[in-house]
Each structure stands twice: as structure tokens, then as C-alpha cells.
Figure 1 (spheres, rainbow, N blue to C red):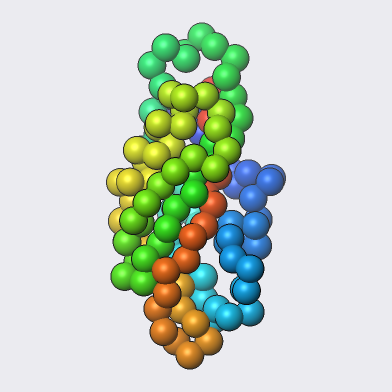
Figure 2: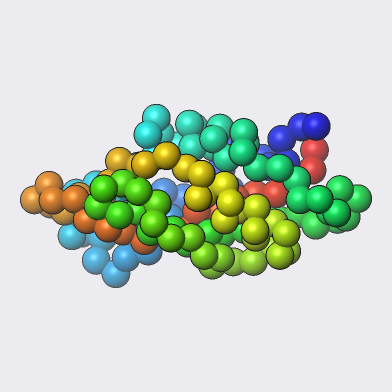
Length: 126
């Protein structure tokens, strides 16, 4: 079975739109997935399975998972910011919870900080 998600970034998600913060000028670096965005997309593609029971449905779209990247780089929480279908939402949460530690965000002074981000995951049968 082919990957249930598109390997391309979502049109709705740019690097600027992923961060949820009222004061982006406060940060020197936002959290980064180890290896960069391509490695993150590959991790997601490798770990997402098409939800059981939806094989013959027309459900396609984007689940947006809100995650907290702690100052240690650990993904500490995950919740749905934009729902697609309960089964897709659950799969999005499961994949995010399996992620390795990220490179944490830092302030202008270089101090690691916890930052909340939105991570879009596209579900599409190909």
C-alpha cells in the first residue's frame, strides 16, 4: 500500500504558519525536527497508516496537530487543532507521539524555550 499522506508539504502550511506565538521576534530559532523538514515528512510517511474502515471512503484532507516542543526538544503534548475524521485525528496524534526529540527553540539570548506549534498532516489515498 502506498503512503497515505502526500510527501509534499501542505499548501496551507508555510514555515511562518507553523509557529503559534504572539511574539516571534523574541525567538532566535523555532524548534526544528532533526534532519529538517524532509526528514520530518519522511518520518510521518513511514509511520502513518491509513485508518482501518476508511479504505473505501472519500475522506481526504488535513489534520492539524497542536504540539508542544519542550525546552529539552521533547514533544510533550499533542491535541487536534483541526479535525478531519476521528480515525485520522487519532492516527495524527499517534504519529506525533512517536517522534524523536526536536532541536528546541531558543530565545535571542540562546536560552532553550518551550514553544507550541501546529503540525499539518495530509491524508490522501493515492
